[in-house]
Length: 209
Image (cartoon, rainbow, N blue to C red):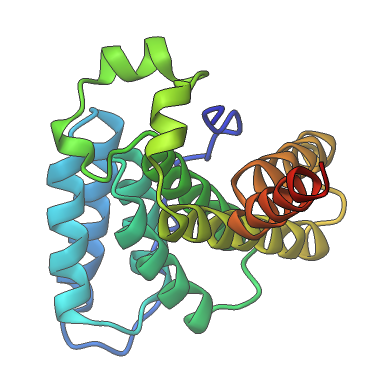
């Protein structure tokens, strides 16, 4: 599976207001997380953002920022949970849907490559192999794996479309539409029901022979 070519803008929205008595602490933790992200210290940023959520779970920006940081750290499943929380708190923020789509694609790619643990992967090896998945790896995928990949890719398409509907004049509209077309082609490749249908047709033809 081709690596996601779209890039998420690491945009940390400042916490404008909160009724939490720990307002200043929440602001400070978010600001520190932004600083860590800028320095490439993603895990430290994630730790600060989780601490911020422990203080106040009602702030949309913190959930969104955590989702972006988790994507950067290739923790795609957790990123999806954080971004869904952000969407619940603020369903009108387009970038949340964009980021959620990227997280879904990222997890699908991990499954397709036979790895769900980003920490055990060497980033240089990933960058060299990101555009190809060996036939052996594809054959090793179970139907459950394929179903999960298809579900994730369908979710990615759904969220990209939501992003476009909320931001119709987006400068990256054409790129996202191209990505959606690519994802649709991937769905056809990994859809186990399609594979089973083809196998049934081949079996029928063999019986007729």
